[in-house]
Length: 319
Image (cartoon, rainbow, N blue to C red; front, side):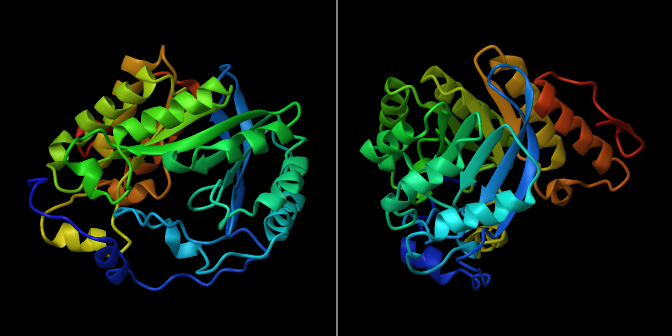
């Protein structure tokens, strides 16, 4: 596969999409409490809220988060209402993630007038994480941070990849310099940064997927990012199916997910945390006999930030 062969426009990406899911702007479309290794080495409970709001304006080629978004901006007051709805039903947690399928500091997604109410709902948490595009890291981040009295703050940025041909083709509309400037800005203002990185890229051989993820981690950690979360790239948004059918993309195998976490912790464990996203992990497995045990191993590695012995299975002896 060659990264030089194909370029898709925003119109191409939008035209390939299936329909969105029906969402309720008064409720987050999902919420849960998960466990995560914190920056100080302890394992904490994290209330993760997937807020319902306006679609991200950047339309990245590989993204499927738009499926649970609205077409128009939602009214002021609804984001705090969504948070209240979820937090009433969730058990206590030390940290909170506010993920909104796009950019927390896009005022057309999260109204600025809601910042005080959102911050007040975060007061009982020790640490707050939001997601944002590097180009939208600006004074709004500082405005919100100042409202988080007694709470540490972290912004998750999508780096995706450092591959020089693929990054421009993802329609993310940023450069590595843009990413570096965003990290520098946030860290200068005492805001922690985590980075999302793709495992398996469109337009290049899947055999190089782990290596490119590790190169991307190396770049992120060199800038002072404190945590890298690896996301296995998948089909499901329309255009990725097209690329798969054309031989321009392959989903990673479970063995690659294992390798990227092992090597990531082994190489960069002294620089920061390395996680791999385990959502819908079963889709990457060839063997149903060992997939549950292998997933449990990866969950423990995420929490312990240590490499654990591989799982033994008759499908391939040691996986």
